[in-house]
Length: 392
Ligand SMILES: Nc1ncnc2c1ncn2[C@@H]1O[C@H](COP(=O)(O)OP(=O)(O)O)[C@@H](O)[C@H]1O
Ligand SMILES: [Mg+2]
Image (cartoon, protein in one colour):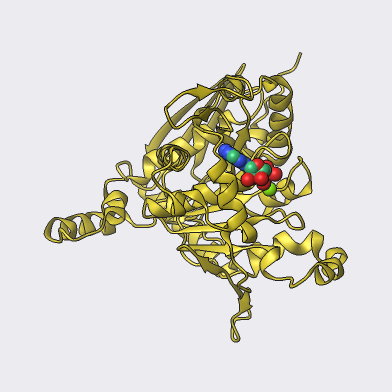
């Protein structure tokens, strides 16, 4: 049987690895050197601008994650080298040409990590996880956007308790996200006023809505853009990966042991959209009584099983918590309304784990980082967020 892995498939996946400093992907920038395929083992040679840049581990990690996400790949080896002076000059020329051609197709910066929250089936808590995870990331000090990609099944505005409306800047005509609890939010529910308007827009906008949200919204500088995905494995996933090649998927599942079926669907979704799956979140894992007794109402081990069968980490488990449902109904998400609850603390832990796995992109040059590091030694009042971005 011929090897299903081709150089082309590897190169396609590498188009999702960005050098945030140069604002383009590693293929475009000519950083990809040799690719060897030996059975399921892929070795990729990368030439980076400078050998000892903090960006290095980010690009290496991203490369490993994107290639591991390709079905049929068993193992990935990344070999990095520093570019020669001549290669560097060539690369800078490409970077400049890119900038000139204004190659950025969306308003989401290359330095923004895009995390799509999806699932293999409906009603598992994608929207609840998206909202609380976005708020948890924000509480950790990151700049966070929340995009409701469930265009006509939107639930984000209700969960955040907002009736605000998105407005466009009079000059740029770009839509301005609504600021809620410190995160920047966009949802169809923040545009349409009533069910009737929704109906009117439906036919007009559906296919274009996601494009609009990525191209016509002034997202600004964000560390993370959390995207609440609609149920199913359809067009929105494909459109998202086309428009935002850096997008990665987080899968929400329940503890029920139906992992096999869900895994097949998720793997299929990842393959068709070429979106790597970064991890699994188990929701509604257990119910805890005030005196600390745990009941596993919906089974046990489903998250772990799904993570293992996809070969990705389980980021954490969120308990079944009536306060979470009430918070969603009253527009007061638990993470902000009641941070002491076990469910809120679980979301914080998941957010911390996500930051470890998908660290915020390095938006500074090496020289800039060193300069700020020195400045930081003198300025103790630097916030935790700034410290974190320095240490990395
Ligand atoms: N951990 C949880 N504890 C209690 N209720 C939850 C939890 N997660 C989700 N829910 C509730 O379950 C329902 C479905 O969740 P939702 O986030 O809308 O799922 P999805 O977006 O996947 O359709 C909502 O009513 C929500 O409040
Ligand atoms: Mg939803």
